[in-house]
Length: 383
Image 1 (cartoon, rainbow, N blue to C red):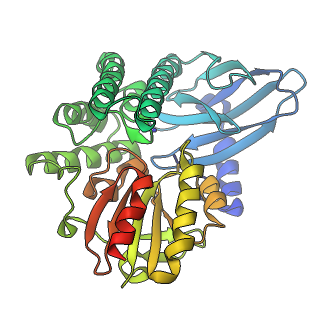
Image 2 (cartoon, rainbow, N blue to C red; image 1 turned 135 degrees about the vertical axis):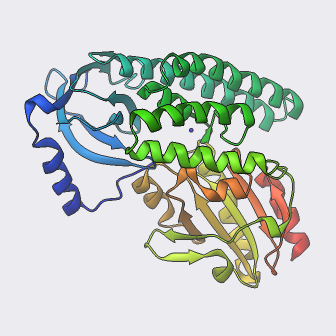
């Protein structure tokens, strides 16, 4: 597999002043050129554990030049240069002067980076992830159009994931304390982590990085996230692992309470009491999202008057993109800001998006739906 600009402009302005009014001896710079980019705007953002915080923006000069600067972070941190929805990731852990060269046609793929060994490694990892996701989507398309059987899809998808892991481990174990080791752990395919913290062998990789970061950067927020995720996975693994994917037992499912576009807290059990519910987990940034929401709209229009509700949980990394997409949808739309750290994903045993569950009027989960085209049969039966 974002997450977004959660801060109000006034607060953000204070942050920008604080970050960028630093001494030259304790700062870094990210500059460069975007070929054929004159007049376009690029954005410089800090990547937190769950979302992106806008730090500054610049209109490219006639030569496509840009430059951003900031204060050196206390521990390795991640930033991105963004043009539209394409991003170039860089890591900062000292007073580096990073130079990026790219073009508008292949902004996030055709770039070069100088001045930061870790950022060069991150480019390699990002390209590995880009290739893996592209291959995965080809397989997924073949599976969805029924030109590839499910068992072949799973075997071939597993090979893609394992190929990424094998390469990524070379970067991770070369230096467990590095920014590239952390970055490699959190790369995603189809919105989900490639390294699964709840799989025994992958959990050990998380643990190795977490232990070294705990020594090297004991007070860093990223260290706390790593430790928390590793300890959580360790508890679940020791207790026998997550429930089987096809298990449908309401006692194993938790209530959900998340914020809507209007920032109102909406609890699943209260908003959907006495209704048949399609509990949908998705991300609007996924390629199949527009068609999926069209199908949901048709179902909602047909059954909304018959005690039917859609409670849609989004895991979009870009808060503003999610708000814009969700604003005019007629059903309940909420977003989980914890993204890959989400307790909801763990408890519902979700390892790929999108996926849906059908809850009956008493709140019991009666079906797990991986193919939304099959959902109406279940809804009609319950109705």
